[in-house]
Amino acid sequence: MLKPHKANEELQKIDPNIKFYFELAEKLRKDEVTIEEYFSERDMTPRTKLVELELLLKDEIRFNLFLDKLTVGSRCIVMKNTFGLSTSQLTKITKVARSTISDFIKDSLVVSQPMEAKRNYNVHLIYYLAIIFDIPYKYLMFNKINDKDNSGFDEYELGESETTVLVDLVQRTKTLKEDLRNGERNIFGARVYNQFFVEEKKYLYTRVDIKERDWIIIEFYISNPLSFSQEALMKLKSTLKEQTKIFIRKAFLRDGYKLVLLITKETSRDIIKEYAYLNKNLML
Image 1 (cartoon, rainbow, N blue to C red):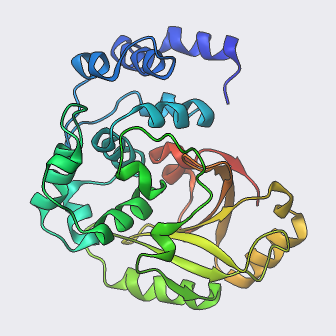
Image 2: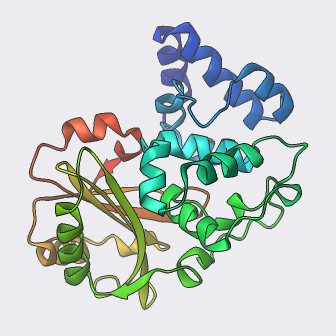
């Protein structure tokens, strides 16, 4: 998180366009503008590139509060940008028509047109998108969330996530990686048997993101910060037998954390620069 005086200094140095959109997002977060007023100043379409995103991601708590103020469709757009995903990649990952992905985002973008009034979408698509965008599924069902208890993982429990051990999961990701071409991505969820963290439950809810040629990212949801002992992390890293960087970040729209395993044969520096959400605390 940026300290206030450092944040102000950085704002003075950035592009005026980025500064305007960042400050607009801050106004929305603080309820100084309505969502309708925000949309009147900030274009939001499935193709929107959020130039202010890197700055927004520097403060995870503020970023989560900003996400909470958005509509379902605009949350999708923000998280698409966060993970560097295109609509074409989403189409191949979910195996649904490109028009379905675009329609889902557009139908749930405007406040005055609730999704209930639009076409019906398969609940398993919503569960899958929740895993891809790494947010609780109810944030893809409703614009306003009154119940802030996000301890459930229905998108993993009721969706199509497999249950496995970490070694088998890593081996599977390697096989899947070989099938990807031309920068394709594959993202899915899994429940991994917990062999590492005594403070956590039987299963670790796990998001896997594979990019052809570049990297494999495996993220565990961790509820208790006491889990991050040096002994547990070393055991985890030795199990992988791969060149791995381990990061920790705040979970999106949840109270806990994400333990991020970045597996790559190349330097991780460019990857971290490209995906600002990874630019967090390096553990190992």
